[in-house]
Length: 417
Image (cartoon, rainbow, N blue to C red; front, side, top):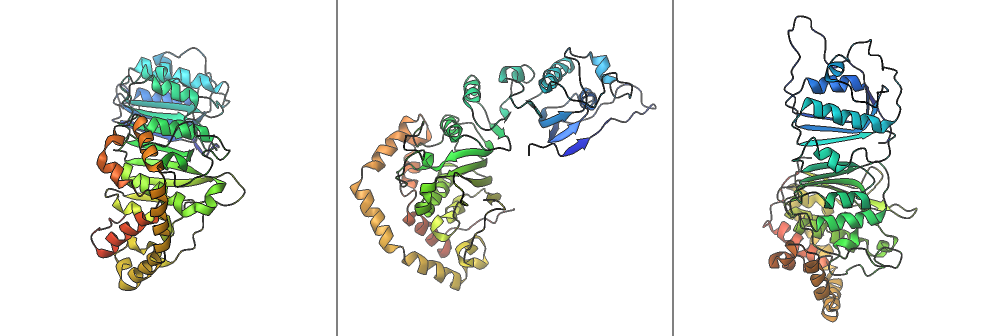
C-alpha cells in the first residue's frame, strides 16, 4: 500500500545502566515495510548490529527532520535521548534520509549483502545502484520501489554484473505495459535469477505465446510488441509474483490465454516453489485467468517443487464444478470425478482435430521457434524443452496432462498453502 500503516516509536534499544560498553545484537536481517519510525531509533539499532547482512526499508516515513550533513557516529549513538535537538516529528526532503542513512552505514562499516531504502513521498528512486554498491559491493538481490522495470532501471541493471538472483519491483500502483515488455526481455537474459516479485507489473501474455495461439494485435492497439515472444533464461526460478495484462481480445480466447500462461510456466520454470499470479484489466469488465478444466491450470501439476500457489484476487469469483479442480486432492481421483473430466475432454475432440489442422497449414510454429532462438537464451536451444512446448496453448496439452493425473502416473504434490 502507498499509505503508511504502522508507527514504530523509539527508542528500540532500552537503556540499561548496569551494562558496560555498547549494546551488541546478533541480528543479521532486518526488513520494514509501510511504517513510520524515528530516524534516530533506526540508526541506533544499526550501530548495535555489527553482523547485519540484509537491510530492506520499503516505503518508510521518518518522524524527524535531519540535517543534510551526516551526523557523527557519536551523535547517532546518543540520538535515543529525548533531548535530540532535531526531533520535530516533521518530514522534509524525504530523499535526504536515504542519503544520510547511506553515509551512516558507511561509517559503521557494515558488511551488507543487500540494501534497499525507499522513503514515503519521495516518489522517485531514492538511491542509484552505484550508491547501493558502495555499501554492499557483492549484492545479488535488488529491490526497486517503482511501477515496473522502467527504462531508467533497465539501463542501470544492464550496467550490473549479470549475477542478479533476486529482483523485487514494488509499488502499489498500476504500471505501463511497456515495462512488462522490458521485464520479459530481462528474463530472457538473466540465467541466475531465482526470485522475481513484481506483483503490479503488467506482463503481456503474448510474450509467452510462442506459437501464436492468440492471433490478435500484439499490444492491443495494432502495433507489434517491443520484444517478441521468447523463452526465459531463468530456468531455476523459484519465486514468481507477476500480473498478466488481460487484453479485451482475450474474452473469446480466455481458455487459450490461460493455457499459454500455465503451460509456459510449468515447462520453462520447473523449479518454482512459490507462484502468485493475478490479471490486470484494461476495460471496465472483470478479468481473470480461467481456472476451469479448459484453462489448463492442471498443467501446474508438473511443478514438483511447488509449495505455495495463489491465482487471482479477492475480487475474482470462479464458478466451477468440484471435479474441475479436485485433481489437486487424493479424493478428487475417485471414479465419479474422473468420469466427469473424461466426459468433458471427450467433447473437445472436434476442437483438438481443428487445432492439428491449423498447425499443419501454418508455418508460424517454426517461425516463432526461431524467434525464441534469436532472443539469446540458452534455454531456447534445449531440444527437450522445445518439444515440451510444442502443444503450448492447445487443448491437447491439457488432455495429455489430465490423462496422466487420472491414470495415477503423475502424483500431484499437495501444496502447503
